[in-house]
Amino acid sequence: MSVGVPGVLTEIEEDPFDLIEEIEQLKRDKDVSILAHYYVDGEIQDVADFVGDSLKLARDATTVTTSTILFSGVHFMAETAKMLNREKRVLLPDMLAGCSLAESCQPEALRKFQDELRAEGRDFETVAYINTSAAVKSLCDWIVTSGNAREIVERVPAGKEILFAPDQHLGRYLSEVTGRDMILWPGSCMVHEVFSIQDLLTAKRKNEGCTVLAHPECPQNILEISDFIGGTEAMRKHVMAQAEPQVFLIATEANMIHPLEKSAPQHKYIPVPGIMTSTGETCACNRCPHMARNTLQAVRNCLRDESPEIEWQPFFEDAREVVAKSLLN
Ligand code: SF4
Image 1: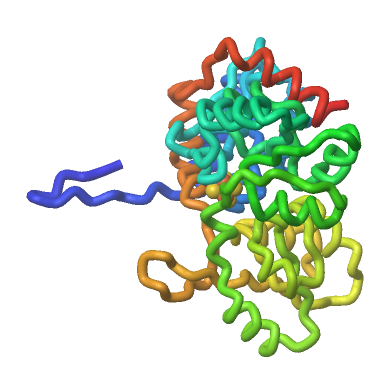
Image 2: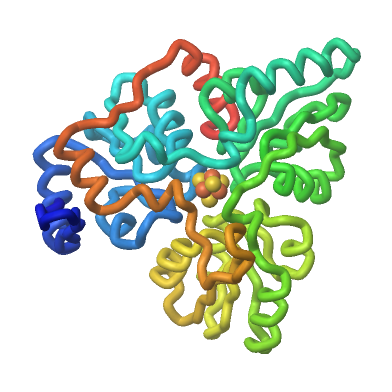
């Protein structure tokens, strides 16, 4: 809401408690389930019906019984929910909530590269991270998340090469753990790319005996000094399995600390600092600007207006087949 002060437009924050109440009421009135990713604000995770990583949420989307899904996350996630639920309405609070990884791999560029490889006589299958548009998914053989990537890569026939897109860091890590050579697309996540190795080493020294948990989207130099590498759901299970209180340094989006604290409150969690590319200074947390478009206000507005909505596209059909065989079977 804004008020008219002469010459100045001032944003007035709405009371979060009022917004939460309004969201709960709108969900009931409009028959909506909210799916929220671990990287959105904790208060949105708390009003959601399903919370999780990309793999869990894709699976949860197929169990929703309401007529509408509101996906609090980014565009490719809402697209995935729609392709798996053609008959349901799928809403996304802000259509500008994109993803630097998905942006780095455009369908025309991928198709051209695949054609070039085929022209060279290369026999390959294309494995794409779920952080891709539906148009890109429709060009692939397999879709992986950080939660099931290893298992899917092992399903690619041994005689085939693997073209892995778009995350070069996850691809390199998978190549190491599976022993499969991969042709890597040169994409990366803007959030995981900026972790500061110097500050991580300093934080390790300051917190003697701590454990570093890193997402496989992090660059190799971060993974090399981490104690545990895994996607967000694997991180959550790992801390839950440790009964004794510990200090964990977390190298992923800073909102991940919210579900970790809820699942295993006995531990202390410290976000690994990142470097702000604009100034070169380090900052205390790593936030995804796309996920940050999911504010309580944006969620309320989306429920109230029943918009914006993900519209069905013709290529969703092919993308759905790849996603279903990779993530649901
Ligand atoms: S954290 Fe990175 S990979 Fe995840 S949505 Fe944001 S930009 Fe994309």
